Image 1 (tube, rainbow, N blue to C red):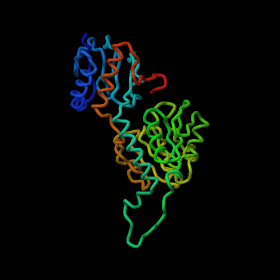
Image 2: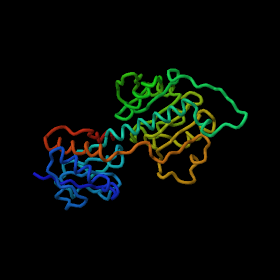
Image 3: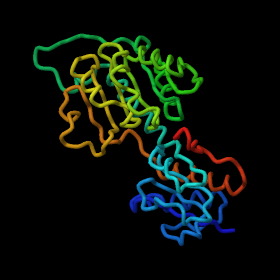
Image 4: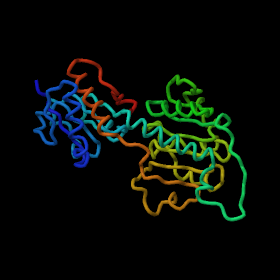
Length: 311
């Protein structure tokens, strides 16, 4: 039987997904009709981006599942009209991109590369050698798919890596902490802090004045996770005081970051425009097709969202 799949995202996404998703569905052995428009009552699956025009799922009476193409699902989990299973995107392209961004910026901060990139003045010859990676303490907050791979990669480079998650996790080569007491220990360890948590009520403003105070003097922060994880005013105060040495921020509460925001002009902040990683259509399409195949075969969906936890 043909399954009808609605692609509900911005038009440029359709341009990049149409061919690879069609190919992946064919390779998965699925008889499908993939379009950007259907009568709602005819739709079996929605391949979805939360910024699409579809916000009310009530008319989709035949709907089996919503397959999100974003890693983040905070903009859809609270939708009361969504009654069917929701999956989030975890794909190899997004994961590898995040590993490369995190590793690059951790190494940049570890090696103190900024002062050399800006350039030395004639006569300057500061030979302040960085420690070896084994003597640099890095903490990754969030040990989901992305956080665990980033933490493992950093540990493989020799860093002394700690990780934290709300529930107990085990990651090879990483000292894992959980719960409130574990968070305090993880922050105390963090000469470089990497934030890869989801945006949930429990994680908003997790990095507040108290959390920042627990971090070592001169610690550095890399946030490619979610903007609301950080209390912005508390971070700016810690940067002004010199307690936090530098913050590299890829995500913000408002995007694009408003022109008047102090992050743009602060000498110890690096702004990157939400480019840490991106879902790659070819690899993401294979995940989407596999989930359609699984549901049709009565098998568990991959990356099913826990709506109560928010991820």
